[in-house]
Length: 485
Figure 1 (cartoon, rainbow, N blue to C red):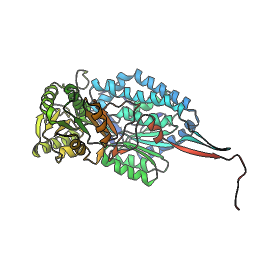
Figure 2: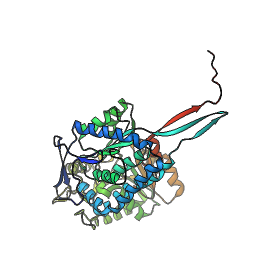
Figure 3: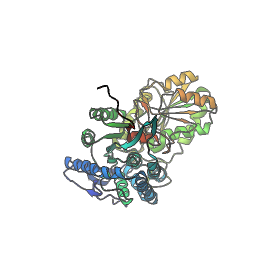
Figure 4: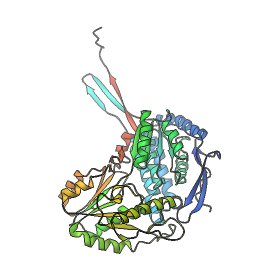
């Protein structure tokens, strides 16, 4: 199969495509059919060296440019990305298996939003003046240097832009390593940035497995590491980066609670539960997979949920009528089905789905369990698939304690028409990102990230500037220097 938007080589370094066939092979598989749509190679040590050297050289010149000039490049890249949204969305669908109904509206468009937002912010990155009598202090926000971004496979375009946009706005260079399962989309981001006027070497893309990520993270010329991935991987990468005293942002997994009180709007609550479990075939780190439903609304909720779940259209993700695509791979499908079997064996009640959809591709029917208890595997471990667990509760204090009973803390949601309770409960939830009467909205203007085992640092918003820059303090003395010596 020949893709319309096919990158021409495995890596993008110093403004051009680069190949080294000595690297381990990487096959990009279209999850809907199992067909290989691209063959690439993992980065060799020589490729890694080229990328770091190129980023190091480009960063110095880029940092000398004004924030307004840097922002102009990012905003132009956003415009180009929006103009090519259709082709980029189709590539995203081939890369991930997500349906066009999603990718046309949530992937390249979200990446463009990040480039535009941080492009607009770049000229406003300033320090402050601190008067001290006749002396004074001023501060400057300065770049970190060379940043490494390591992406996950569920949102390859968006994640590349969420990391690149604030990094470049602050005057850094970036080397981005996509997941080996979705290697294509970040290469097009690199192309677009060059076309928009970014200097060669400023944003480089190298492919590879864990060894390539390890080589980048531990190189002494790298100043910052930003990872989107599982909590298990995050701990390893965080430790490796800490050994070199590098700055880090860790956006990791979750086992997030969604709390539905019995005064909630039923249709909205069902919509939130479906978006928080079935969007992107459930492959979203912030998904609200533990759905706590107050007993007064439980039966009505389960009835309406199963009615609507039965109408979800699975199928060819290139058909814009398709609402749910396949899992990223057969291995991920089998992993998720293992959790489904544990749910059954541990006593949860299957209310929909729970089966592999036969045919080409890695499809699972949208699945939900009722009568789940907090000690069950499906209520404790991140599944990363279209599997929802419904747990009963009676009181507010009870559900808050149970919702917080996890080592993770990425997101949480509350559905209620009691405005006081909505804010009171979100204040008590141990999560970095909370939603009231909605779920999984992630505008670039708002910070996104977790607490506890779900990571450190924040993506997006003005908060990201603090994670891609550092303060320099300058004390200015106007009078004589007094000394006792």
